[in-house]
Length: 258
Ligand code: DAK
Image 1 (tube, helix red, strand yellow):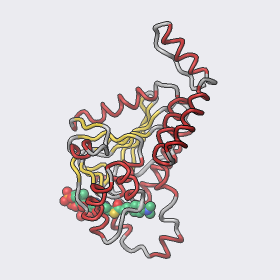
Image 2 (image 1 turned 90 degrees about the vertical axis):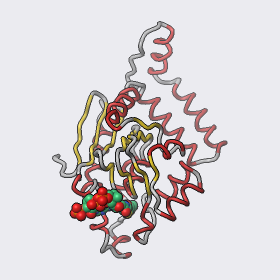
Image 3 (image 1 turned 180 degrees about the horizontal axis):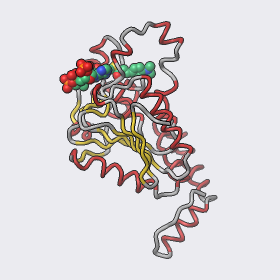
Image 4 (image 1 turned 45 degrees about the vertical axis):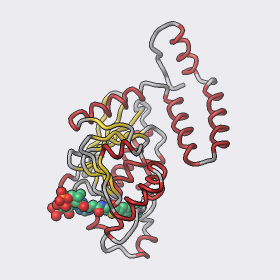
């Protein structure tokens, strides 16, 4: 399938999705969201892909949902068309690790897309914000929940109630992003990290991702129970035997996702 609003590529075991509506600061219109969900679905099904990188361009990762497309929406149409559903949830449903490589603006829905990813790597030019309040609405794709969990109540309140943007440096200090790198190194850093993850046992990576997600979604006691059972379960995999044998034999492990 040819895509209109994204560029989809693979490099080794890494799939990349580049948002490609530069004329609109990569605003997320319905076509882009559908295409991104479609590309993610294909990468999920592709056994050769072990990690996914989503990126934009130098100016914008994505400046939010497409305001021009959204402006005339009514409450009944939002409800009846399932405006909230489907494509917006594609990233959070993805079982493979997804890295957001963010340069320039990540605003509104763009910031929410980045926060739905497992790891955010930011260029030093990145700006994060949830300015929906300036449009008379609030974040609708997880912003109020994910930003608050990432940076805490005070900073999340300040950003969501005032629409203030955060610099990359502030985002790193606040633990919204894992790392800030010079703009020119962004894709290389993101691809290197993705390739490293894709080289691990896919079974262990998916299990680790699920376990970390539990830290946000359940109590500590429940999370610890999940972690323990998942840890035991991995001893039933060939990859565990290979990983530990490779350590003992002082060689690189060859994982086969089994
Ligand atoms: N939508 C549509 N077009 C946009 C856009 C956007 N979000 N952001 C930028 N553009 C367009 C501009 O209109 C302009 O187009 P032309 O006028 O040239 O045709 C072009 O991109 C270049 O933008 P600017 O001329 O404004 O460029 P500047 O460098 O001066 O400013 C900026 C860059 C990113 C600071 C500024 O464009 C800006 O403030 N953009 C809007 C940011 C924003 O408010 N984002 C939040 C949108 S609301 C949902 C879940 C979530 C959401 C919706 C639904 N469901 C689950 C259903 C999310 C909502 C949002 O994200």
